[in-house]
Length: 325
Length: 241
Ligand SMILES: Nc1ncnc2c1ncn2[C@@H]1O[C@H](COP(=O)(O)OP(=O)(O)OP(=O)(O)O)[C@@H](O)[C@H]1O
Ligand SMILES: [Mg+2]
Image (cartoon, rainbow over all chains, first blue to last red; front, top):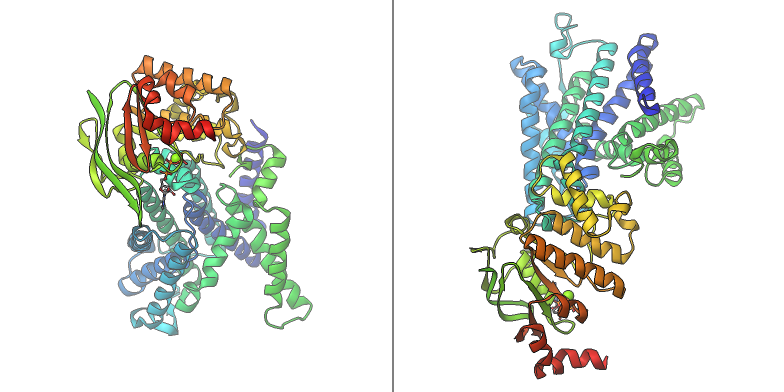
């Protein structure tokens, strides 16, 4: 067995056993890590593989969350079924964004602006949609009868720990398979040089649309998870630009276009945020923005030390293939 | 049998007529050269054929069917592959990946595509450099990569845009030999834009000369090189320059 495989298996076993010794708080931190790794992996399909910069992924988180929550609250539909319409809705939204972008040749940062615009429109829309609570928030009932109903995504911290871990691992597996597939190679070609890709027979528009579809569908599940984990949804939070930024940070810090980048990035950034929260509280600094300043400084240091991402830097040290993006 | 046929093809960029009513026919299995001074419209003509630019007037037929109006990827799938004068490798990918993605145009199995890339890589002396990133290659190697990647799509016709430029004479001879072998052994039809005259004279069956977007001569190399109009507008200028 190769060294990397041993490391992976040990890490996996540790992740499976460790939660039994964790308190509620630590479990919640790991849920955030896995969630960020999952969403980052989904975003990476568009940016890292196909070269499409989305800064509006909160759109798919929000739509997925609201769709599954509304089906559950209003019709009693289990989120395990509700996730399919939630996915479909996000894929439709993705196709609309993608089609507009590709039809009118809106590329690069302008495409990113388009994705932000759609997330903003959704935020304003859901802020006024009374069917899902409008600005007052949308609340999922938490009752004794439903407690422990895993098929309704009802459970304690351990349940959500393993669920989010499973999602992060599944996303890793999906991205691994995509990266090795013909489509994955065609995405890389498209990312590197769209015109050259067309010249060797790649239908660039189709490849891009498929990337958006897969990324949107994956991200919608991050939204479904969010809804049933927090049990409350506020359009102003879930569709917020800052959520989109949070999603992109982990893969950027970890290494855009790599398989382990989103995971490593999440493992660094979420604990960093938590540490800073704890530190500022312990030191009695409660001026607004102090945490953000230190978080920003931390980001700058990491990016200065590992400009291509932390994972490629580690992989190069260990002599593993993924040093290249 | 004619493989490629252009009828009255024109393209203007705002005021400038880059390609002016060009008609030509390329027979299957031949090597066809397009020459002309800088700015004559040669690259533009390639972009029109390959579908990267749209025609203003005229029609293009390939392998018996009209191709103008098709997308570049569709034209590639019909069997017409082009290289870019200003090379466009996929920089962050390895040389092997670059070529294997070309093979994937017709091979959906990724492992097989990587295996089949060997042929094109060897033809252009890139096999030993297959692990390198394309961005690490020298310009002559990038030119060879352009050709290897285009060839990997298994075209009936290859459009080569100044692929000898920047190569040293022994390297030119090597590429000429490779292209000659491909043409002879596989029947690959080649259309080349070339300033390197020794490559043109040793390979081409026919030469087409453009000047200011318009055709000024066409014929076998020896005949074209003696044409006073060609000497005045192109060869003479080269000799003086
Ligand atoms: N996209 C474009 N927009 C505007 N003008 C263009 C464009 N592409 C080419 N041209 C102009 O069209 C004319 C023909 O250019 P083209 O590149 O086809 O020439 P060429 O024969 O390939 O020259 P060279 O030998 O230098 O490669 C030139 O005057 C060029 O400036
Ligand atoms: Mg040119």
